[in-house]
Length: 155
Image (tube, rainbow, N blue to C red):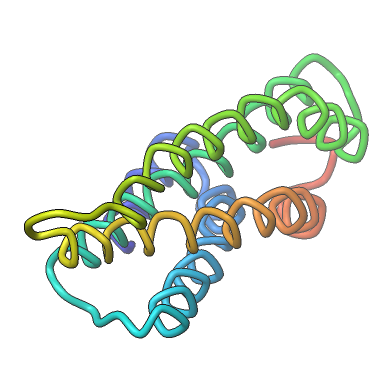
């Protein structure tokens, strides 16, 4: 997560913007852990791969909202207007990405056959983490964008 933070800091040229993007990652990881707990699954190599995938996907949600809001602010919009418009425009791609990943992971969760118990944990982490993480991203990223990003005078 620290490495991703440093990469995002370099990309955005700011230490605040990556905080906005990564604020939902812990919530997504908690969602994944809750899903593992409910399903009586354990943390193993497959679930850890799911955690890495989850961090990337949830970070992408934050990047979509933050980057679009920044572009709108460069065009002269106020911070509040920009983040609301960014959420309106980017909610469909975010929800479609989440739906595609969740539907793609469902065969892992409910699959049968040789070795299904290993792949099942990967699917559980992805489904549980994406559901909680996406809901958090749609609410928390715009909120933290308003709170943490700089004033309207500059990005």
